[in-house]
Image (cartoon, rainbow, N blue to C red; front, side, top):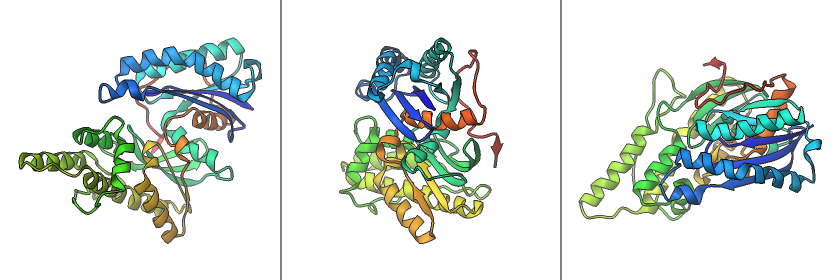
Length: 338
């Protein structure tokens, strides 16, 4: 089954073709990073306009790279939530029109669930159940993946997402948007014990976390040093921040695996590209005797291959949509809250 998939939840226009949920025939991405970097973050109206300009061209490119035509497509999968509403509507409108024209099923896909499903592309033998950490600019959540289309939320951030904190801290350090990659590079040359930052915990929900206080602590440290005429080391701050984020995420993921009895853990989303987090996860899983599945960097950020992957399993579960499918800026990760 060949699925043509679309992803436009934020600032990357993505189109891919995935066969039988696991084989990527093509994956094309049109990045808007350079444009939004001028403003220090994503401007929703500009993102929507640029999606509109790119999506048709990218669709043709994906078909060409796969050596297919539209007549070879069996279904259309599209991200419909959560995300920037205007950006989502561009991809959804295009997908609905194409599905209607071709007379093929339209499959709605949840963006965060798709980030988790990206692991299937890198690990063809991977099957549920397992626990996952979805960690990106808008989401930080620990999830029990009970089946391909059944997700149970275990805990997550109560305020800022980890990726959002990276960008806000990076802005204070004068780093270009998006700041996560730049901080990762700086951290390699920094002293990760130069600064000690808070690790918020919640007695009533041990898997919950908070990045707002961490972000504020870093910003205050920078301001205090500058008021004393001292320019803080961006490398040391980045290294200390990356260490703290990892120390907040890794133990919680290990606890989630223990509580659910799962022997496999997966990580998805843009923050999964962070080298400190990847290193610490590898060490923790090795010590705990757990299998770790982290996609390559190309599948950590937004892409449509992950949408086509999850779309296949949503289709098998009978989850298709009519032409009145709408987009949603927010949507629960699961129907069952822990």
